[in-house]
Length: 88
View 1 (spheres, one colour):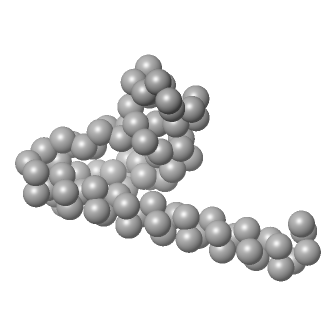
View 2 (view 1 turned 120 degrees about the vertical axis):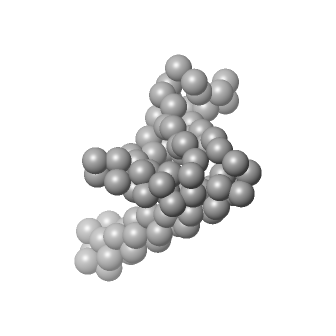
């Protein structure tokens, strides 16, 4: 489960990021909409489903986690830069 903004980053421009992961590991990745959310999910959450052979799914999940860590690092750097500029 991800925030919508994270899911958008995972998909990428013209689906480039998600297609790269799918092609590289022979799996299918889908970002499911609000109709598929779990009871405890927030409205701005998305569910990511990964299907395929176990080894490919494992690698795709790892690569997805790496991508999301990079996104988080980038966001933290932006916040810190913002704070250093005295905007907060």
